Length: 140
Image 1 (tube, rainbow, N blue to C red):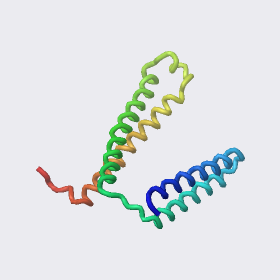
Image 2 (image 1 turned 60 degrees about the horizontal axis):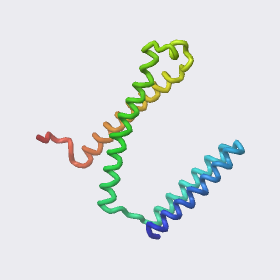
Image 3 (image 1 turned 45 degrees about the horizontal axis):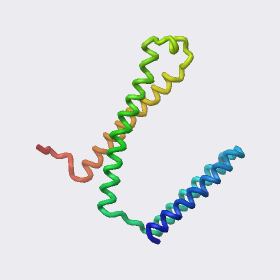
Image 4 (image 1 turned 30 degrees about the vertical axis):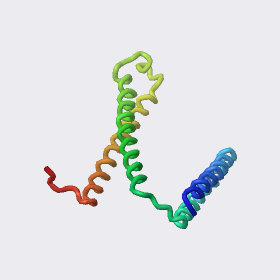
């Protein structure tokens, strides 16, 4: 199976799983939704293993750059969002003083924790991969 057929099959499976999940949610059957998603995942894993789709160096480089760019955009955006959501609750703005939008502060705290978690995961994975691929020495 080549890459083109694999992509088409992936689209078909995605639509099928989406339809199953939609029907399951409408009928309040969350077990069916979970089973549909897991079945789709297992099917795609098995198909990918059989298809033996390989990536070349160019595609790996593009994936690495896309991941770096995503992190470079997402982490600061999430951090700035957390700061902006936490700022009004401490500033004494009249709308927030009466407790009318109390969930805004909670959302800001969640964003702040997610930002910190993202930074920690990045630091740990960078350290791990740096050691694994020969870094970590005193480079000057």
